[in-house]
Structure formats: C-alpha cells, structure tokens
Image 1 (tube, rainbow, N blue to C red):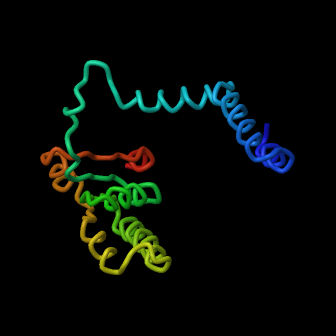
Image 2 (image 1 turned 45 degrees about the horizontal axis):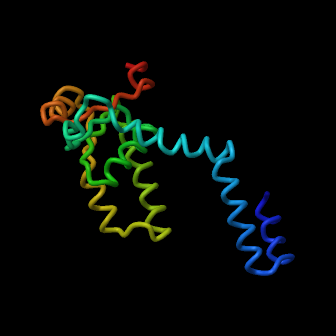
Amino acid sequence: MSCDQSLSMYLQLPFDQGLARERELIAELFVSPQARALQYFFFAERQTTRIPGLESNLAKPIKEVGIIGAGTMGAGIAMNFIQVGIPVVILESKQEFLERGLENIKKNYAVSVKRGRMTESQVAKAMGLLKPTLNYGVNIAICFSHGSYVIQLISVMQML
C-alpha cells in the first residue's frame, strides 16, 4: 500500500475506520521484507561500534591530526577535524601546493560565511587551528609524540 492509497482511504472511509485500517497497514509494513531489512541494518550498524572483548573506555581522544597532502581531499579532511575543534598540521611537498590548499579552505569558509553558517570570527578561530607546513620531519613527528594521528593520502605519497 502506498502513501497516496492510504490517503485516499481516508477520503473513502469514516475517520474511525480509516484509523483502524491505517493501524492494520502499519502492522503489515512492520513485518514486510523491506522493513525487516531496514531493522537489521539499523541494529547491525550499531553493533559495528562494539567489538567483543574490547572495552569502550580504551579509545583515546584525538588531540591533534597531521594530514599529508593539502589537495581537495586533504583540505576537506582538515576542515572536518577543525570543525570539531581539533588542531590540524597539514603538510605539503611544495609551497605552491600548500598555498593552493589553504586558498581552497579559505574559499570554502567564505562560502559558509556568505550562507550564514559561520561568522568571520568562527572562520578566524578555525584557521587558527590549522598549521600549514613543508617540514616533513619536525611537524609530523610532533603529531606522533602527542599521541595524535597522521592521515596519509596515497596519491601524495605516490608523488614522493
């Protein structure tokens, strides 16, 4: 039964009978193959966060992230971490690539300001969490020493 059939039923039946018929239809839909598949997916998705034998309190907070590559994907990943207040070191092999990546990030934030999703002060705060670098040794090593995570983009590593 489709939604439009259900609505037309309301026009053809008295209100009480329409409600009763709607309850019957919903009961049928709850046990349909589509509903069962969606229910399975819902609960299976929640089970993926639970690993048998692993305590949930073992997860460590992310304090800082290092991203190798400031291209489209690297810049997008950086913005996601920045959005939740996690400082990001973004590493690039050449100054021009680094500048291009930073410009893309600034353009994306400018669009957010234009659409009213962010203020200029929020953008300034976000950009303050971003540490661009060309130094492979020191800055990424700092991320590792702080128990942070480094995201390595395969395409960047293939160029090196």
